[in-house]
Amino acid sequence: MHEPPVFAFTEAALFWVAFVWAFLPEIRHSGIVAGAPSNTQDAGTLRLINIGSNVALLSAFIVSFLPWLVIPYPRIALSAGTGLLVVGSLLRRYCFRILGKYFTAAVTVSADQPVIDEDPYRWIRHPGYAAGFVVFFGIGLALGNWLSLIILLNFLDLADVETVLACLVSGKDGLALRASE
Image 1 (cartoon, helix red, strand yellow):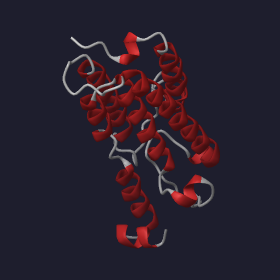
Image 2 (cartoon, one colour):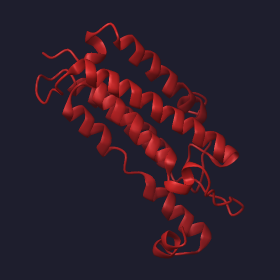
Image 3 (cartoon, rainbow, N blue to C red):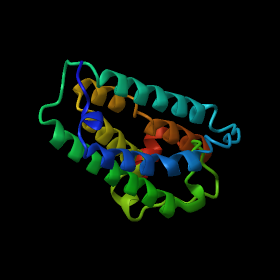
Image 4 (cartoon, one colour):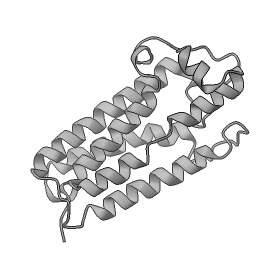
């Protein structure tokens, strides 16, 4: 049995501090602890995302113990993964701040919601999702197993849910909405 870097090295303590630091605001923001209010636009996607991300994380942690597809240079993978976890979480927090009341855990859009096109939104359509990708990439890398990394990255195809809702609220079709960006 393979011992993943996040359990094998003393410097893994930094990973665990970063892991807790990264996910505490996510838990508070999404209402997982208090129970998020229901939302007709969301149509259950928040629950699906919460369950899916937990299943993906648990699966990735379990798979990381397998002796196959081990990432070479585990200390480097752990350090790089921890760094990506921190960078991704910082970008998520920045997105929380930029969007303010419009950053919601549930996938929703409102008619009065402005289109944000400054800072990271100038370059990336969904920087919050991109940040989540970086967080999960960092965790997968730190786990030291290519299969763990693949499991986490395959979970993250969520950006189109928001595009569909934006089309419904704006009355534009998906191609028109993307062309206007």
